[in-house]
Length: 133
Image (cartoon, rainbow, N blue to C red; front, side, top):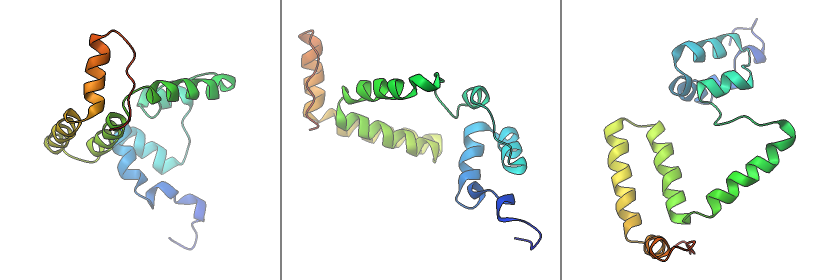
């Protein structure tokens, strides 16, 4: 860093891989503007750019986060672990590699008791009772 540059003039994201992830998330134009100007973007722009999935009023934020967490918690734990892993890998790999990884995850999940429980619950028209196995 040049001696005339302050520590704040070089963003932390550019030292920790953030620029590489940001450009994949929002495209070159917005990533370049954000990194090179250091100017933050607002909530609406972050939503448009795909950096956040939804907006809510500040006073409802915790309630909404808990609602989302409850919905996720009702799903099969192994499937949620695999989904998170597949999504993270998809972001960091080429399409063919991501598809192969997804097929592998699907095959692993097909052999779980939770899968069988999900099918039984559907047939019996009841909520599934997943056990994470």
